[in-house]
Image 1: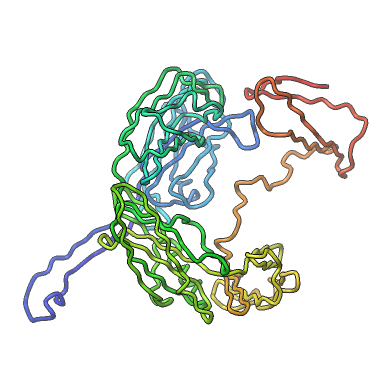
Image 2: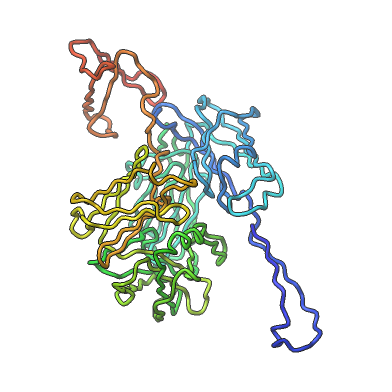
Length: 523
């Protein structure tokens, strides 16, 4: 949350000597707060037959899990829970919390989460003013409940989100979930909700119907029919790039960017260039982007501005004649922005001509040089390939800049398109590699190592957790899901601690059910 003060100065009267008492206006962005909490049954990773309760805490600004830890209290049936862990590892506005392995009972679970005052967001210095407490009675795992229904519409496609207390089984889902008037539906199943997608441009309201018996993944089922009228309200004006994540265009390919526009009559387009020596400062300046306060809620979207980091190349206007709530797509061609002598990246901004705060922006590089980097021990390896031909590129100048924006390494790729750097040689004054710049002739590309790092927290990279002194077993099947009555073929490899294959030894295979019981045993 940020506080601002605005004061009207004498310049509004062209500095004439008039004694006027001007008012001072104070305002602020929304106070940091917890907006809601969700509770549902889920599965513990790598323990297919054990279940847990997960809570999702929603904040209006991103927060660090480590900061939340000291401001969080959780109780279940009146007893304090301390063995919980954060599923979310980085700063986010939705923090997922796992309560650990929960003993299954035939009773509902009474849950209370308290976020105490003083918790701060990563975007501000103002903490939560008062304690926030969320109480919830979670139905027993053998019962499936619908907890909430929300909807949305982007001008062409509509969606309905149905929130539940546990994951549902996707097979035959269309037999249980329907809408009226009838629509062609597709379904996406998540941990605690299912999203229903359809082209709903010709309807304002729908009746959602969910039949009794909808099965949950952990044995629960819906015990009665559910029906609810869902409104598809008028869409707020918006302008957004179709590809919100991509930052590169291929030099020999199309130079067009697609922009989706809804309920806007005219858009302004501005294309700028950011010079190579300013790229890191520019990205750091807008790393946290900005908040969009237009409309009924708040959204976190990237709005960049060239400021003093580059210069504007050209501006353009596009008029649109579309129906209300109808999505139209505009293609922006960047061909005339190209300059063979320019080394840097481009900034493309689009905004409503009348309501200037409705906007979107994108930074991108136009290149045929593809970059892959790998960091291992004290070595940084850079692989360079042609994007259009998928071939290694030799004699490409690779320059590594540190976090202080100083050049610490420079070399050219070999015939395999590879160049290696010894990080010990460039380590000084707490420098570490931050930016990778490539140049070959008129072609230029870059990679921000801080943004390109692959997060491994979602994957099991820890190795063996339960060490077996004599044997190691590796098992796999043809697929992960089978229907009743199908034959399951399971293959396995048994090795000793020296990775030699074990021969002529008796083996017992046990199949464990979701409830933890032995379903079948094969000698």
